[in-house]
Image (cartoon, rainbow, N blue to C red; front, side, top):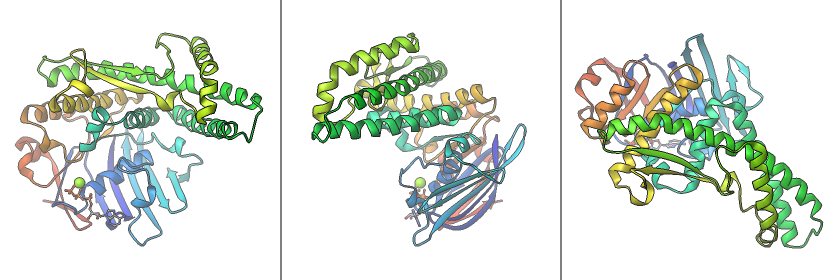
Length: 372
Ligand SMILES: Nc1ncnc2c1ncn2[C@@H]1O[C@H](COP(=O)(O)OP(=O)(O)OP(=O)(O)O)[C@@H](O)[C@H]1O
Ligand SMILES: [Mg+2]
C-alpha cells in the first residue's frame, strides 16, 4: 500500500499542507526545526490514531488553535481509501471512506506503517513500559480484536486497582467484589499474554535472518517474552488461567497492602538476546542499534504476512546514522516494494543511487514543496 495524498490543517507547525506522493522512496529534506518530523508523525498518526512521540494528543494541534485535521488517501490492492482524523481538545474523530468510525480500534489498521526513528533505540535500551507500548501498538495495527481486548483490560485493571485501594484504606472490607474483579481481570490478561507470545514468536522468526544479514553472519538474535506471572508459551488458556489464579491467591494480602495490581500484562517485559546474551545489559551501542533495526525491518515482513500488503515505511533521521553497509542492507530489503519516507538535513548522507530514483521534497517553516 502507499499514501498518495496528504493534507494537513493546523497540525503542529503546518497551517495548511497538501502534497502528493509516489509509490517509491520520498526524501524529505530541510534544516532543523522546519517540520520534517512533523510530516512523518502526521502520516503515522493518520494510520495509528496516536503519535509515536507523545501520548498527549493536544500537542499535535497547532498552537492557539482548536483542532488539527489530517486527511490522506491510501492506495491499496483493492482500491483507494480516504482517511480522515480530527484531533480536538475534546478528543479524536476518525473517518474511513467518509464514514465516521464508532471506535478508534476499528479505524486503526486501515493504513499500515512502520516508523523507525532515533528514539526507537529505546525499544532495546529503555524501560519495560516502552517495550510494552511497542508490542501493543504493533499487534494493534494488525488486530482490532487485540486493541479492543487491551482497552477492556485497562478498564478492569483500573476498577481492580480502585477496589484494592478501597480495601487498603479500609473503606471496604468485603472481598467478594475483589474476587469477581480478579476473575474478570485474569480472563482478559491471559488473552493478551497469549497474543503477545504469538506476536513475538513471529517477530523473532522474521528478525533472526535480518539480524544475521546485517551483522554479516556474526550475530544471532533471539526475542523472548518475559511474563510477570509464570506461564509458558505452549500452555493453553486454561493452564494459564490456573497459574494466574494461583499467583493472585498468593499475593492477595500484599496487593491489598499496596493497593494495586502487582502482576499481569501491564508489568510484563520482553528480552532481546544477541549471541545468547541480553543485549540491553551486555550489548554494544552498535549491537543495540542493529537489534532495533532488525526488529523494525521484521515488522515490515510481519505485516505483509498478516495482511498481504507491505506497510509504509517512515525513516526519520536514521538513514544518515547508519553506516554504508547497514544503509545499503536496509535499502535492499525494501527495494521497490515498500513506499518509504526518509528525512534528512543533507542529501550527502543518502546513497547516490537511491537519491537519483527518489522523489525529493523541501521543507521550510511549515511548508513542503516538491523539488524538481
Ligand atoms: N503544536 C505545535 N504548534 C506549532 N508549532 C509546533 C507545534 N509542535 C511543534 N512545533 C514546532 O514545529 C517545528 C518543527 O518541528 P520538527 O520536529 O518537525 O522539526 P524537524 O524538521 O524534524 O527538525 P530536526 O531536523 O531538528 O529533527 C519546531 O520548531 C517546533 O517548535
Ligand atoms: Mg526531526
